[in-house]
Length: 166
Image (cartoon, rainbow, N blue to C red; front, side, top):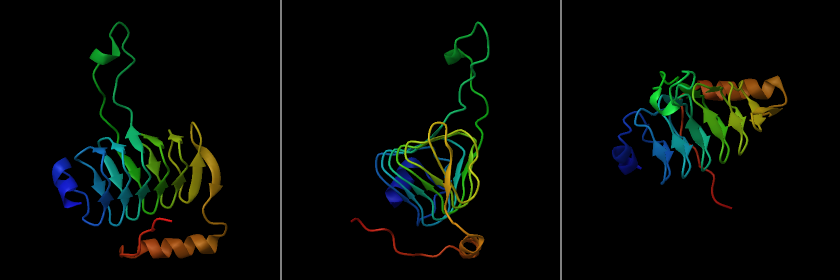
């Protein structure tokens, strides 16, 4: 993994964070510990990823990078606005082929379904899917389970056992 951090110039990616091959990643990516970015992901600039976050293959973080509101000027010549920061908080899971528009916040413990297009922030522990992504469920059914999980996430990140292939 060290060679990918060196190849992409990823100075702010933790040594415990794994990035699979075939990704296109902006060199300003900031990550926490014990996360995973699957093959063929495209991560644009100003992305912050927390601890224990998983990106399935083909996830993209894009958008907000062309001005299209100037009459009489082609978009290609209109310039680019300041790119907003995107935050994916601790223990979130982003499903296969999901697209996150730049500037969204995926809050702690949220899940984004495969193929979803996220255009708005997702609250903690909610499950969102569809185009555009909408709430389709919750991760924990009672407040006690959520509080237990919150207390675990409040502790310093620690190593565990990654999922193995079936």
